[in-house]
Length: 324
Ligand code: DP6
Image 1 (tube, rainbow, N blue to C red):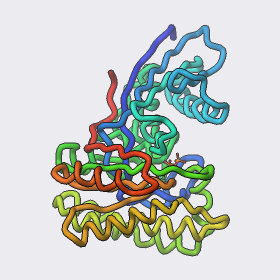
Image 2: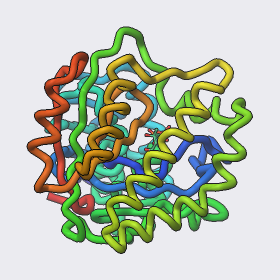
Image 3: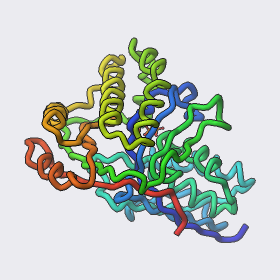
Image 4: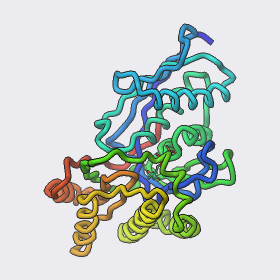
């Protein structure tokens, strides 16, 4: 193979039913299925260049050589692509986010979704959406949900072959808006890859996983029926269950900051007084406050006025990962 290159764009996603814990760490086979919404205003753009002159893989993030841990993770991922393609050449990856890196918005989902598409294309593969989602999953579990469009469900599956994400509704199906309250944090966080390993050490993980099929059904139906209060109820419960597992793990993982809890309380109060809002929180202190388009400016202003909120990002639902 001579030189070859491809560029792809993918959005991050916010899960309403969370992925927490793997039954197979290496293959990233999740303990439970999950459901998320792509965030269309945020994106990662990744180019992969293959050249026989390269002697090793290289990863550049926002114009800078990435740290060694990220380099190794990307090279391991490229090994998976090379093994499917029957290739051996090294590649250079250049990736940029249109949202501030380090703002606390998890970027591994958009990063590995864009990389799966760009790398498989550069190595001459023409994968189906299902195959791409499976491949992205190997890089970062939540990345498999950023391959299909709009609202997607990651099927728990029985193994590598059938654990991938499918779109349950297109991006323009429902005018939800994610208002992300960015909160400053005082300490370094345990990343999600490390966190997944700790999930089994919580007494609550089995109960959370056992009830997941019920919550997935409630969430899927709430999306399909555009039933905001049903989605609010199941998504807040699911976020609370994941954080209950986190704080009861050994060692414990406490991602909430005081401002996180303040927002959780305000969101419940705002909803009580008739505003369509609910919260969901990932492995960090930021609060994703979901509302409808008509209320989004108001919700953003309310969040920005709270102490401890550094800034507020917002996004409407996003489309599928695509080549550019
Ligand atoms: C809390 O997909 O980031 O955001 O597979 O190790 O990359 P890795 O983990 P990752 O885990 C996401 C965890 C979460 C919940 C979710 O997005 O479902």
